[in-house]
Length: 79
Image (cartoon, rainbow, N blue to C red; front, side, top):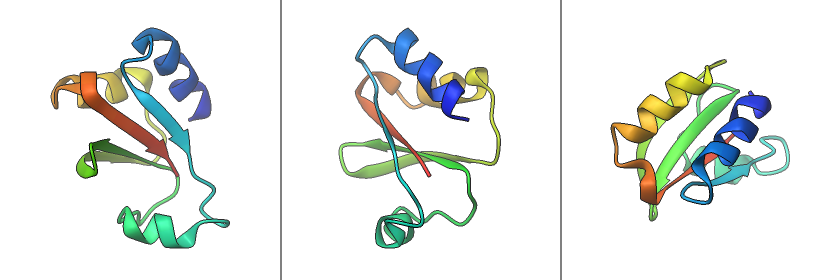
């Protein structure tokens, strides 16, 4: 999954902020994001959750999810 996010970071050219969260080190953040499955991608706009993807996903799935939610101002966290 990290390779998917690495490719997305290159393609997004700074329009999307990506962060990896270590679920073992930050269980509070994982709970706060509402993550129930690892790996997951949580997409935020500002501080508002706009989408999430669970399990192994493709680059196309992530790009479609961002595009359908106006991904220019979104961020994604990999848990």
